[in-house]
Length: 321
Ligand SMILES: Nc1nc2c(ncn2[C@@H]2O[C@H](COP(=O)(O)OP(=O)(O)OP(=O)(O)O)[C@@H](O)[C@H]2O)c(=O)[nH]1
Ligand SMILES: [Mg+2]
Image 1 (cartoon, rainbow, N blue to C red):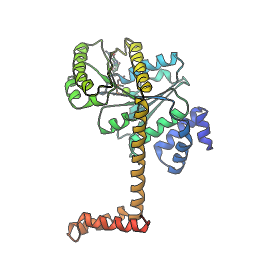
Image 2: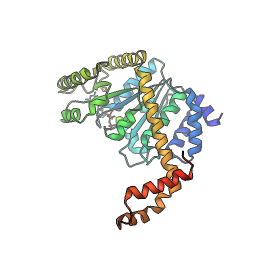
Image 3: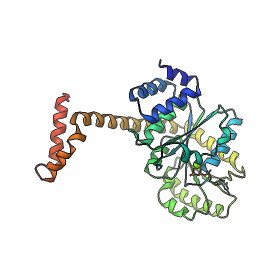
Image 4: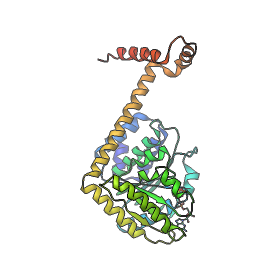
């Protein structure tokens, strides 16, 4: 077995950090794949949460509180903070968003930020691999925090077993957020900053939207929790709602179903990426593109005709039956 993988399975913190860097930097794809392949049989035990919501909703403060509770229960926690919209790589900016510093010296908590850096497999691909590393290393909980709810954030959230959607009163855009389809991705709705005005009204609005959603998806009832992260209020209750929701998913087979759907997406994604890469190599698309553009521009050939021919040649070359 690979040395690095062996160290990860022993929960060696430095090996875990090195493995995450290997994924992030994509310097050695073969080594990365070998690592993930070796860890695969050891995955599947961690409970994966996604936590998302508007900037400043209190996601990190809430996580900080949840981690306190989970640690009291002797559970280990890995947090991956993902900022797909950030053009900066890792480091300072994301560091500011993490308010979990007090856990920095606790071996049972590992916090890591990942920024978008044009990963071959996309940010979601890199996050999926990072989850596997923490899962195989034996962390009981792996929690992904994203900011906002764009397409990439949704892809990242789809990597989790449970999505916690954090909403707050007073942003003035609650209704817009609900309309924008944000509600679709949430399993548990947390109204944070309940100490502020408008929390009850927001709760009624969320209840209304959810009543429509729940009548369509009859198999699920989405809990709504009210918290104040700064005042440490409602955290235990939220945690027990999350845990019983998870238990429900696990016991009636929906968790397995969700995880299979995740594998299906992952396989399709890897297949597409790899097939594209081989086709690109063979067809030499990048180098020939300019010439093709010219031919199509001058109407010497149409795009379908050109590419059907090139791809046909490619398939013949590899002896595709
Ligand atoms: N009044 C009040 N303020 C809160 C509460 N929870 C968090 N805050 C404050 O809200 C601000 C943002 O908190 P964060 O935890 O950093 O929010 P976030 O959602 O992680 O923010 P980003 O990662 O930047 O998107 C901080 O100044 C917190 O002190 C709460 O329950 N009540
Ligand atoms: Mg944050």
